[in-house]
Image 1 (cartoon, rainbow, N blue to C red):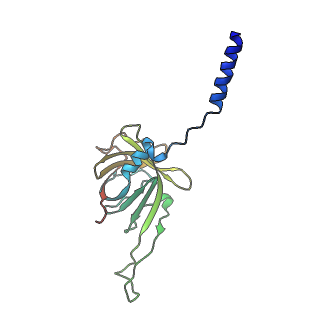
Image 2 (cartoon, rainbow, N blue to C red):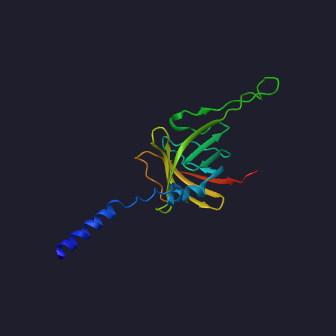
Image 3 (cartoon, rainbow, N blue to C red):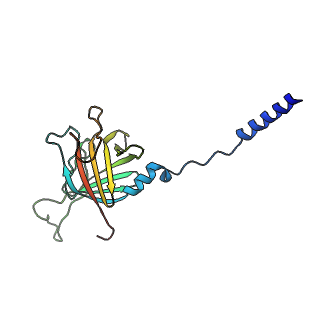
Length: 189
């Protein structure tokens, strides 16, 4: 009798757990990484940049005044001066300017280059890790650490190559890393 009772209870337990509803998938915005990305969202302007005297190959040149937009997992950069070295050296031309008479403004057309990367953050490590990946290949283009204080974002970045060690701090600038200080632009300014 006891054996039958135990087998019946075991079968009932098995059936209940086998057909239990599957929990809904987690909302990516509510994960620690999603919440960290949410804090970074906005349009940023490069206020300061410090690069090593001999930057590692593959490190882009960020210009003071360049704008960077972070929207969810999307990191996009527009540089009117065309000095941002986009992944694989292929900046995307976004147009030029001319005056009302059809002539060129100044000596050259105003050029605007842009690049778009996938933003991955890991808030579990301190300082918080960041990776910028190429969207088409998912290959790491830049990686490093960041520190967010109010509307100021400090990044220490290196190329995504395996032979370049990951920075362990933001300030002081680690050897071989590029230090960026960005300021969030408030809406309407």
